Image 1 (cartoon, rainbow, N blue to C red):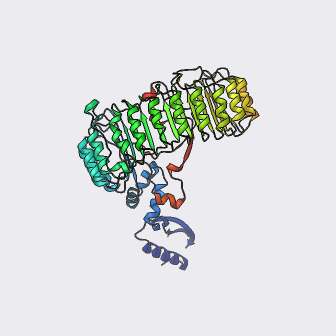
Image 2 (image 1 turned 135 degrees about the horizontal axis):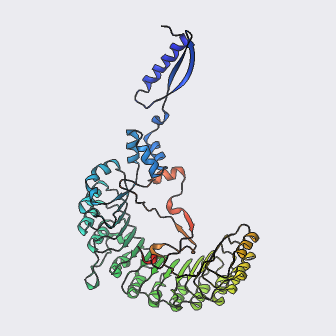
Image 3 (image 1 turned 90 degrees about the vertical axis):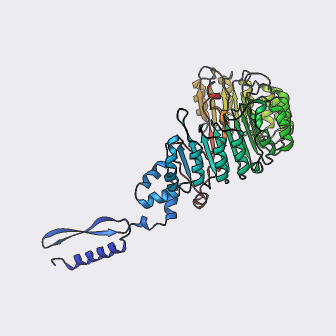
Length: 533
């Protein structure tokens, strides 16, 4: 009574909409103002909540495009969003302290689709033990990646139980843990799909003759990457390396033991390796001669291996003619120089990236490299006493494919830099650091002369040269094109990075992390940082 016909109609529509969306979230908006009996009356109409009509799969795809913080906020909106956000999260990072154990059931009831898990504990705290690891493995039987750091309370028995429950594991990275060869062998015997293994500071490994060998196990048939760092008895992994017939990448950082004999056995049985990193290793020309049997070798890093000389590099160059990337840190030992680099220039025409640190090449080898390696795109010369204006002028005249050039702590002056004004037609970036004879005026002139060229000048005092590529990283003045790893960040408990399923990426046409190519100049690590984990 007292309402006009139009008002009654709107009210009827409102009631109808309200009843049809009773089970959905709603919002209201003022849509009409009318005057009835000389009074202003506002009539509200319910609008449908289209988000509530979205299928769970679509909402999950939206969540997967958000960062971790935004996902957390979305999970607080309503119970439905909380459920979908948890079920669509595939990566999870946890602070693995001892008090995590009672939270495991509730955590993995919510995040029941996790396939990539990171567990990290700080050194001052008591980590999770076997009970927590086994409880996690019981709820994450589809786990494909595990990263475990500083979980010192986990023993061989815990790793063995984990391996029994998570047989689909494809990638394992462990560091600063106290389990030993038995736990590692349990993983290798049960996880037949394992493709990547990274081990750092495994304190449970025994030294000397008492060391229990690791591998090969069922995983040897599928392993493609092995990375060993800071192990007191690294050669105990010899059976695993030898048995990994499909191994493509081998990285060894600061692992004690005699590697020459082991390489002689490895090279006879594992000939398909394409990438080898050796840093601060007891290896000599004999070991390099054995490595030269890997005829498909494309990437070689020799970092602070003072027993390696020109002879070893020559044997590599003569047989590994597919070499694309070569990094040499001579540690100022003057054992690798013109002879070895001349052989590289002669036999490795496909070379695209060359990094020389603490090596003293002269114009002889530089000219041959520039002339013969027509695909050379990235060149770094650091801490060399012999690379001067003549060598840079030679590079400018003959390196037609060069795109990035880095010069650090070399006796180069303005005259050498000026040669780049008319040379290297494809050059896009030049970085000059701690070359005191190069002035800002010359750098400005070069920028003006070649407007598209990025010139970075830092003329500081020359300091201690440290060419460490610890943990697979590179120096600031080394141009590196590398795959962005799918590593899991380690925020606070129950936080995680954004998980993206393969199907989601394919639907949206996104590039996966392993296909992205990043070009970075990383910071020059100090002497102490080079040995820090």
